[in-house]
Amino acid sequence: MSDKTVNILLFLAQGFEDLEAVAILDVFGWTQYRENLKEASVTTTRFHPIVKSRFGLKVEPDTLYSKVNPKDYQALVLPGGFHSHGFDEAYDSRIHHLAREIHQAGGYIATMCVGILPIADAGLLNGKQAITYPYSRNHDNIDRLKKNGAKVVKGPVVMDDRIISCSGPGSSLEVAFLLMECLMGPEMAEQVRHYMIYRGKDLTRTRMN
Image (cartoon, rainbow, N blue to C red; front, side):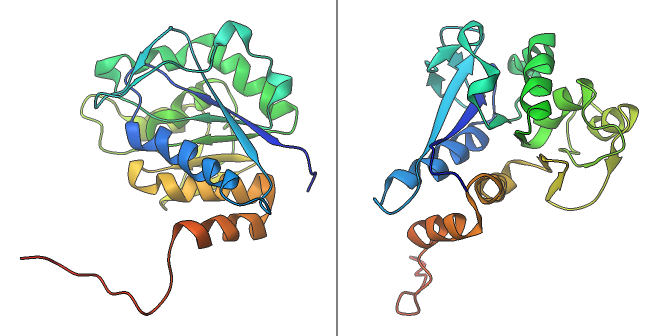
């Protein structure tokens, strides 16, 4: 692994799923917790000055899409979201172009939930394994993957040809750690897990009545 800082681009569409975006920011943010850890940088981008999540977060991302140079990033992260709250903009051809540029340069693409659908529309999943959220009220997400040539498989998290997908927001942390392992190595991912997840035996879960 190179000693250079790993640069990750996180695209936030209107109506993005809160947990899926925050998982990436938090897990990679923990690389700044200890001096011995290699540092990662997550840059948020968007089409609008302010982006509002499905459940109320208002974010002023770091840079506008028009300022993004795909060559600066080793990974693109696309959280899912709610079509009823503006997520349709994630299917914009500019996202297709961005995903192709980063992937063709050897970068990774990490998605959660329906975030994989724009990647499928970009033509990057033909013949590759993927999964998506199966419970949308008004959209057949599984069928959309199949129509784009993807091989839909079972499992909460799937990676094929440097493209990560998952079946829902509950797997967001798994996606974040898998991406970290790919970009920064399994030892780095394990160290961050160590600092984030206490595994000692002297503490027990207590339930208050």
